[in-house]
Picture 1: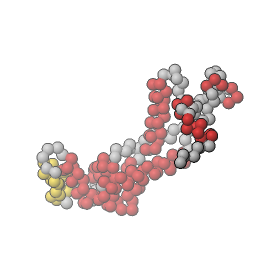
Picture 2: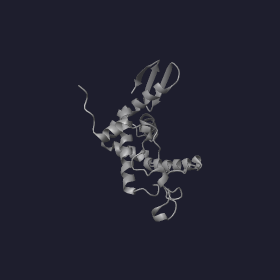
Picture 3: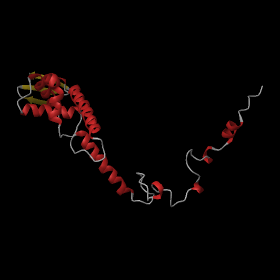
Picture 4: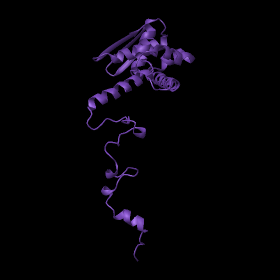
Length: 196
């Protein structure tokens, strides 16, 4: 028994070389006038497609894009002004969401620090993080704990957490960490709190 023959249009597609096909929705190469290909509406001038011309200096175009991206990142992290052309309400919403995510990452890495602040954790973190670029959950928590220690606002549980982190960060086989009254010792890979 022989397999059924597919309908004619499908058979043509099966027999055709896919490399010979034109992408859908594009005009034939010969039907577009090279001078009008990049024209704006009604031939008003070159269209701003957002893409560099083939002969343009890619370094200059890339640096402009990089500068715009850096401005957007600075605005989203709260370290720079809002760039032109963006909806301020949407930027504020994105900034708040990123700050909440950042606070969650710090709370995960530094649970005693977050627990110590209680219901005020997000507000405390937001006040500290304003104008500071994110460095990662662990590094942000370390910097916030040191800031609160210097301000005399670090409680005993968070001080013990900081002392353990400082002892673990010391190079060599032995590490000592101190935060306020808390004292921690690390011998090899093992850390121990000596005085809370």
